[in-house]
Image (tube, rainbow, N blue to C red):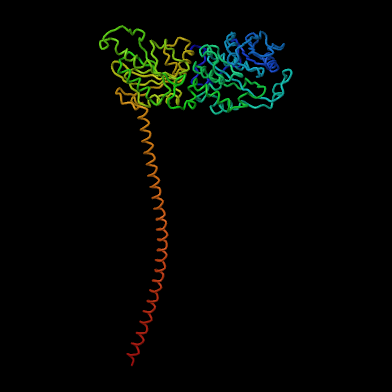
Length: 549
């Protein structure tokens, strides 16, 4: 780390950055305001921007009229240098992208045309961006039902309160200790109402997806996370939303439409990918395998990957496929026979791509994980799932798997979290001595034994879908049999309990009878003893009289 440079953020724990209060502004911010109608609200939004404490010379505002009728205009009260452009393509994503294309700032601040910022909001955002170039900062929006005033009030709080908080964001922040406790989906914080993003992040992640009907903010937030973003909630960056959002009015319908599209694009939403076998636009993990190591070795590895418990997986086979000729030759004497066999075997497999290099293949940066696996090493059925669980649960950026160690060196597989490597490259400023060390600093690295996770070099027969179905049916039948047997045993135990209860009752009665008999016997013994005493006395008197006579 260079002198004076902030330490790298590990995971999403941005607290190490500690932006100072004595900020010397140097970064330019571009505020992009897409708008469709609502001139009265837009006037208030621009008036609030004119009150910001961040230097006007470092602020540009771009209002994007998304086809309003009548066309929007710029009010008299607005920041210096505010520009109005027109985007004829409908949709908020198109409008934002149009504004993004015109932006020149180091930081992009998304702002909806019905969100009024408090005076220090942009400055609160920019303190963070001066601390690191890979941040996404979201302010705290409150939703007000107050009447829209003709002019911006001097005291925003007095006019717009009482207002409702952005409840689900507040809940998300609170239950994850401010998004610092290894949250699984911190990108959910990226909401376009009042969020700022480092321009380098947007350059890496790309613009908003204009194919989506809804969910553009979340999908872009996911791609920003993949580009290495750290997500920061900033409570001092406060704003008021004039009225409720569409989502607040009809959440169930909004989610129904949004989830139908984002499931293809956000692999982190595992619950939206519950189908056991379908394929998605962005796979959860891509395995990279050298396709030149021999047909049998390559096939053993690739087939095992495709047959594993992670169906949300693709395979990239690397090799000089473009050099394979089609000239006639004896196939068994072809020096490239194994390469041709690999190509022919997987050319039409939907989950396998063949490429001459990883750079040429361009693995989609939205893919969360890449598994680099030497051919000939065969993962078990649940091996990949186990490695993914380890990386997710511990927030690791790299899991290295020791497959073999000898005097010739180490053979290892690697499961890489793409977002961690993207962050590491930004932290290292393009000149890392060892990128793995930087990944260790920002996410963590762990070594595991391949045997522990089921890696082997001996291929086992693969269980096909029908075989798996039959095994499942047999297991289900066995479970039903065991359930019936358990029911029978429970009934038998219940019967024995009833009998034991009867035996206890009988035992109590017998104990009572015995006690009664004992009392009767004792009474008889006493009577017998009295009789014996009386008889003895009588005999003594009779004997005495006889002796005297």
